[in-house]
Image (tube, rainbow, N blue to C red):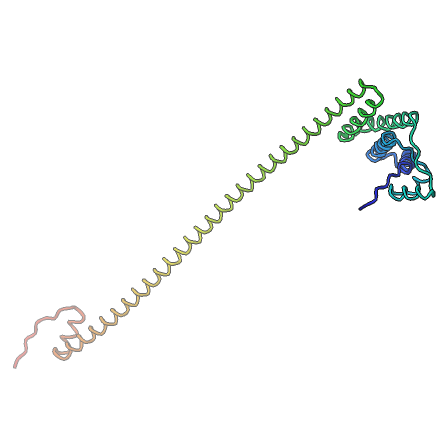
Length: 254
C-alpha cells in the first residue's frame, strides 16, 4: 500500500518561493494553480486541526513512519492547532483563494472559479459568516451549471459534427458506388461492342470465304463449259459465243 505524505510546510515554502519568482509569476495559469494550492493547504491545516512542525514536515515523512518516530521519541508529535491558529490559517486560505478567484476571472478558468467558490463557502460556514457562504455557494452553482452547459454544448456540437461527417461519408460512399456502377456498365458496354465487333469480323470472313469459294466454282464451271463448247463447236463459233453470247447461223455443204 502506498504511503501518503502530507508535507504542508513544504507546500507552503515552495508555493511562496514560486510566487516571489518574477520569471515564474508571469505565467498566469501556473500562478493560479499555486494560489489555489496554497489556499487548499491552509484550509487542510485548519480543518485537520494539527499544526505541522517545520523540522518534521521538511523531512517528507509518511503518516505511518512519523507515528513510529514519535513513539520512539525521536521526533516530537504534531501539536494540536489552537483556535487562534485555526482562524489564522482559515484567513490565509481566504487570502490565497481570493487572489486565485481574481486571476481565474481574468483568464476565464471556470473550473477554478467553481472549486474555489465551493471551498470559500465551506470556510465562511466554519467562521459563521453564512451570508458570504451562501453567496459563494450561489457562485459555485452558477459556474457548475455554466461548465455543465458548456460541456453539453460541446457534446451537441460534437454530435452535430459527427452527424455531418457521417452524412458526407455516406454521400461520398453513394457517389463512389454510383461511379463504380457507371464504370462497370461502361466496361460491360465496351465488352458487348467488342463481342459484336468480333462477330462482325467472323461473319465478314465467312462471307469473304464463301464468295471466294463461289468465284472459284464459277471459274471452274466456266472453264468446263468453254471446254465443252470447243469440243462440240468449231473454234470460230465458240469464240463468237464467248464474246457476244450468241452466234450467227452458218450453212455448211456436205
